[in-house]
Image (tube, rainbow, N blue to C red):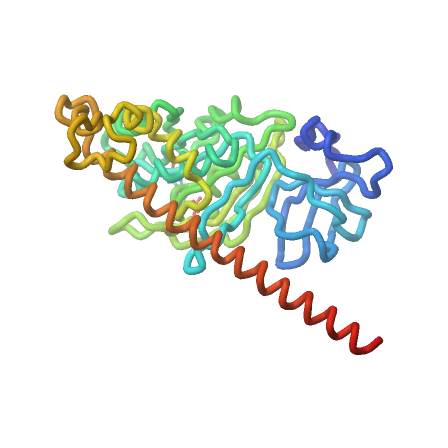
Length: 339
Ligand SMILES: Nc1nc2c(ncn2[C@@H]2O[C@H](COP(=O)(O)OP(=O)(O)OP(=O)(O)O)[C@@H](O)[C@H]2O)c(=O)[nH]1
Ligand SMILES: [Mg+2]
């Protein structure tokens, strides 16, 4: 069995500063979550844990304090990869404490700038560096064309074209791996996340074919998992996402579209809708060809959607608080009656 010291596991002052000298429990990092059961790694051994009641939601990649059986406390992460869950739109954590988010797409029909912009915002709101990984160049006529399109999406894009089935090519990800570093992979089903995982970690996890007509995958990976990379560092593999909806990511969206969000500060009216108002800097930039009207539309659509999702989440949270108050006061009345 391999042992990892705390630093090699990703520990830093960010976590050490959160602990009191006298506090009970030792640090460990969560690698798998199965309902209410957790697998974690401490420097000296793997652990099977359950959470004590007060701990709250957790994600793969989290640092916790534990007593060998129970998780006592979750330490505040450096960031959370989050999305709005399908149907409920409530924030759902995918992974935490991620240094680099590998946004995986393929040199085929999966490639979609609007979708990549969403993943960029997801990375930024998690304090993770985005890295675009374009797989399946061996099946494309001109993979460089996908790279050129990717680089036009945002100045934030760092993109690599990688044949995930070629172990040597996958080694080009090594600058983003290394002791203590965590690389998570996200993207649609069938883009090659688990194929990359197997090449990086030496595992033989199941991968699945995609449909020929639209390049869609079959959702082969079902659970998130954090695994060691033999040369150092950690890889988090995640199930494919059908449609990424964002929540609590307004600032990150503005960062992805920083040129547009800067531009609006030059409009004559502060409440300019960028449609017909005089002195609109955005319309002027479109007219001069400085910005792309389709990109502006994508930004505004994402802003509208995110604000709807965040408002739904805020409403659900306040309903929860009211329900909790009613429940607590019911419990209190019950206790008073009994005494
Ligand atoms: N030719 C080629 N095939 C690839 C490449 N990357 C992945 N594949 C194939 O694409 C299919 C899907 O790969 P997976 O690794 O299962 O994809 P995934 O992203 O993990 O998919 P989910 O687990 O469903 O989210 C498999 O048949 C892989 O062999 C690549 O770079 N080139
Ligand atoms: Mg997979």
